[in-house]
Length: 185
Image (cartoon, rainbow, N blue to C red):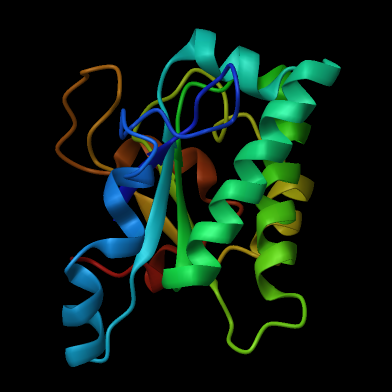
């Protein structure tokens, strides 16, 4: 459910524009009825696509840490109230902020799944091209993330408006991924 765009100033949700409809009304969407009816699942998609915003969100400053903390609290609260997981579609994060990026994913997973009545899913979107994360993560970073990420979603398009007919550009991941296990949809 495309939903929660991180506000770099507060960690709140930029996507709604109305405090009563956080994350495009995620808690009250009629999709929840369909999910229940068809025994499905609904993940809240957390997004941020702007380099300047991501610098503010993932910076090493105390203010940025507070922004991330607020975002984490809000996302976990929303998902625990009505969701089944979180999909991270955060692109254009400079590599020097990879620890904060990784820790945000780990933090949300831990807060969702510690002493939980059910297991919440974590997925991460991998664009076909990006300036930093995930393309410059190393094998240790992927091992850490693989402990909590249930699904990696390879996106054939790019947030940079580059055309791509295949996921060939992700061949740099070959040491980390078993391409025989990729689900084609």
